[in-house]
Image (cartoon, rainbow, N blue to C red; front, top):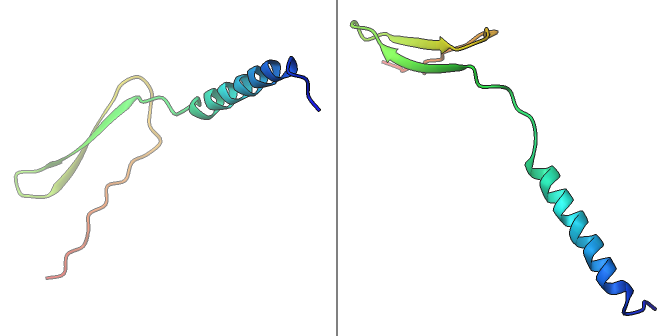
Length: 70
């Protein structure tokens, strides 16, 4: 049996653990955003990938075009 004096302590402990788990679940690291990419079209209608790199280098980029049957 628990005494009534330990219930508030237990509730605070459970609340603190829940807040800690919530903060841990919503925080994290990600790759820094250093480039902006876009797609354009040349004057003869071909796709053109454009990219502006801000501070660092990029390892690579791939532009796919869906094949259309004629």
